[in-house]
Image (tube, rainbow, N blue to C red):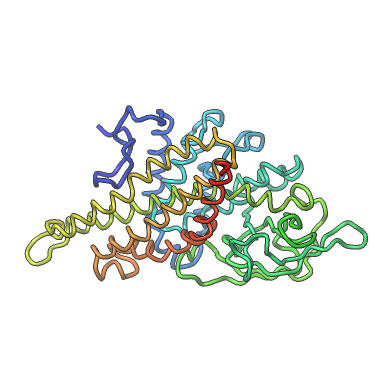
Length: 422
């Protein structure tokens, strides 16, 4: 008997679902997996196409997500001091929540198949919560972190600019101190800001000093402040993520809204990337499985030239190829999740980048093969091939965001050489 709520399609779910002796996973992990799957299957997946088409996740769905504890669990390690009286998904006690609970949450939410919905329903809790938890003052945590984790606020992370993406140290948004020393005035532009359209608050990286990474500082912004102008962006995919172009025109920010220290901004932003890359790897891996499962079920149903599509060897080979791209990365991912709490950040960083790069790269191939199985249905929005068509557009943001594939490959090689002292 399966020990988890799992698919009967080969390779559509990881092995640990049906192997009770598999390492890393305990009863609480299996309990969480079942809880999230039932929630996603009943409340998110059936609505994913509609939410993606309308360009946002409805407020009632976001409130439900918060009510079930998913926002509270979005930051890892958990900010325990900000979670007093807050319930986690499946009733898992705060002290029992570990790195594999975190990985299961990421994996199972992504199973809805709509990356924009995954980002949109999160309310910025993942990207905004970690920096506040690590670098925020007690007052900042009370004013911004706890409301974020309970769904009272929505946050966005304002880093990327029209001319500064992977080159974070090259951004040009400025923050100049007023003569009375009580405020900073921000001017500049931010682009492709996830959740920017609906965010109530933001963490904004701006230049307070000279060129390079040492001149950057993070500010906490109230998004209703005068001088902030937002425009929804229309991209190839992830429409419901709320991707936004933001103009900052003489935006006044109190000095007490500096996160960390002046000049510490680059360190703060870089500290979020390792877990983000682990998150992207887990998400891309699950989307591979979604594409495989949907196309596999189609191949079992679809008849061509008098026989089921699956009876053609060339089709069966596609599923074996997909599995070969999925399962080795699954084992790498699980090992990295284990090591994420044991390995120094500098040593772990290139491995998280490697997972992100490889999983996203493999998703490009898997989504293409799944579309080939579907034929025209894999090119049509909605219907049997709707999720595969959506993934074929969403995958590009996973390859580019969090550091492009080319930037990461170079970074991995340089960091590993440095660590090896060669």
